[in-house]
Length: 460
Ligand SMILES: Cc1cc2nc3c(=O)[nH]c(=O)nc-3n(C[C@H](O)[C@H](O)[C@H](O)COP(=O)(O)OP(=O)(O)OC[C@H]3O[C@@H](n4cnc5c(N)ncnc54)[C@H](O)[C@@H]3O)c2cc1C
Image (cartoon, rainbow, N blue to C red):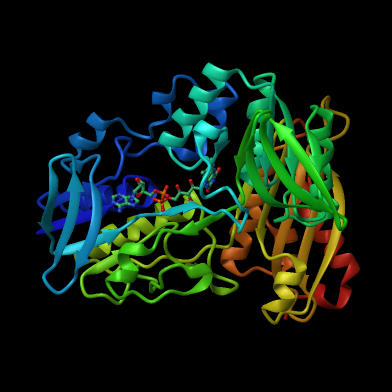
């Protein structure tokens, strides 16, 4: 049996590893467009901040580690066409066009940076001082710019997870950062009541933040790069040495679309929970496909955690298994300087749109007993269903060291299990004064929600 996986990142490599792990007799070939299989693109911001050096240490596994599993890597090889009828994949490498036959194909071509209709982003590039950050190639281009041109100012379009991490990375290298955000607050995946703490942290570290600012165009000028935007109906321009655009991603679906796949949420390829595309013998996983969400049904939520899980499912099923992707609950976390912001599940407007009767309560609790030195507050917003009492979502912001990321994981586990808000208060969580409280911050927040919604607090 010959399995071909396209893509050398989280989804493609996870699929290949799982297939080889379950059946070492299966031939697995991984076709990768560049020379950098299994690199952690999630770690790129920490390469720029200097926390992770050299760039090679961003590899989850080395080339040799991967080959030791028995898979064959076809690097610098672009998959150009799927012939599903003949079960052949056309590929192009330095020696020209050829084709590979497969029994089962797994497509993990991921996503590409989005440009959000901003003029100039599709035509300008690293030589013009305009960058995106999605691959190791992008990383090298940006690093070259920093080394050779020593920029003093950078403008980041977008204040989502990656934009915020890169603001920290640039600031750490002594570059003055201007950060533009279209929405009313940075980190629009969190309620502004909590995201405001991230904004404050950026400003505290010298980042110039402009919210409510919509970028229309980016242009190369004699003085550097000029960004044309609008704020409150008035035009505003910024001229800087370097622009980094991080305004989201778009699923990279060309190959599968040409092969007849159906597109769904976010323009991503429809797959079932077994990661089948509907095209015979073709599976897909990762940022190119829709996400099964335990509270929403299907959505598009491209994340590394999900790509790993989906790839593993696809790899197992490609060799005849019946694994199922159990679904995301949308758990995410980001570190911005000394602040950690996290969420899982739904925010109130998302839950209402999904047909729930949600209500949200915000509270603050210390990360451990106040009498033990170093206690710090964590702000937590709990969203629950006022009819059933079900937990629907949680958002948290705390200082680095408050275990905010692991606390969001408790809520994520509760969401996965379908617990009510009141049941979270009943969980047997750990306690010792330097690390927690008899009622952990997680439960102080669910109790606050229950107090505000007494009728819903009693499970049926
Ligand atoms: C800077 C940054 C930070 C991030 N941080 C986090 C984080 O902290 N947590 C988190 O959960 N997620 C994070 N993400 C998102 C996460 O990295 C992605 O969800 C994940 O990488 C998706 O994996 P993938 O395999 O689906 O696709 P991708 O990583 O997009 O990889 C696609 C692969 O397919 C290859 N490819 C594409 N087309 C072809 C073709 N035609 N032929 C051959 N090969 C092809 C590419 O070369 C690449 O190897 C971050 C992303 C970025 C950019």
